[in-house]
Picture 1 (cartoon, helix red, strand yellow):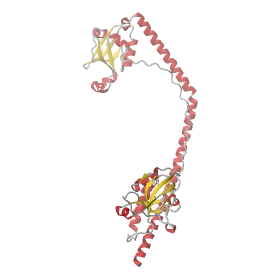
Picture 2: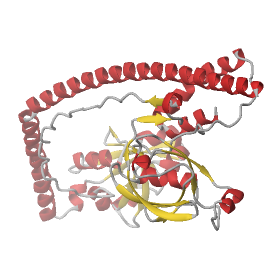
Picture 3: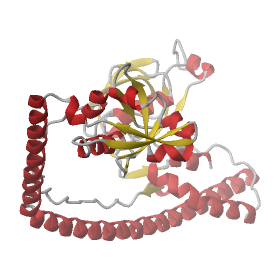
Picture 4: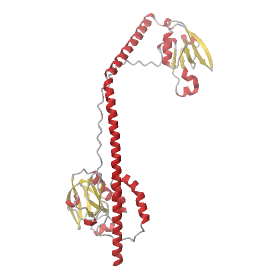
Length: 389
């Protein structure tokens, strides 16, 4: 059964599923039939043909022992001994014979079976390569054109030959519908400000409460901003703010981030306002002056004009983006319908492949049972011939 395991190793993905499916069958058959005495070696050694995922050479090979290398006149046991040649294979067409020793393939020295199998696997189909062999102690070079592997020959000739045919796998063709053009993104001006301008004018800096600070402050962290620094002599210091205070509200408006804090400051910049802070688990109310008094008149007008321009620009950007989305809405709906059709087609192909793979596995099981019966008959014939002689 070593030939079956060697074959399964050479057949790739399909044989991997076949091993799982046929191991229980082989185990039951082995228990049902009593073991026969080991037969003598048949005239044609049954072993796997070595080929790659798609390239096929058509020989049964084995590693050389030191004794075999000495008997064949080789200086070292490097190479692969050809034990049998498949009829009509690329090796047979090139004149390769049983008993040859493959010492080089495609200009590269051959060390053993594994390396030769890899070299054949890496060679493209229909590629003509030079194979150097030693026959009757004389080296010679053969020109072999590799073929595509469509069946696995398990040795023997004539009525004793057995070939394991792999059914062709279906080809899958999936068509993706064309993507509709994405709507053009409007140009944006990014303004990075780590501290709100109004807070700078008050003489303080704040930050959001995240990471370890959020764990430290607990539930209050989600509804407050942290005072990071208070400038000496500033309006914030005169109001009584300290670094480490948690600001909960500005002018009665709750704050939970530096953005909402900045927006609240701008809403109350024209008049005095109160802020609610949390300090040492105590709530305090502090009063701050009008921020507009802290700004020069020219700067205040410039600030107001800039804020109005930004609001207008944001409205224009929103309108342009909405118009682009509306213009491409039909194309996106068509793309979605096409994609749903392709999904249905893919599911249909998956079911088809599943059915075809199942049928192939059934065929492989049947062929394995035939192979098993063939091998048992061969063992019985050799046992009878041995007992009669």
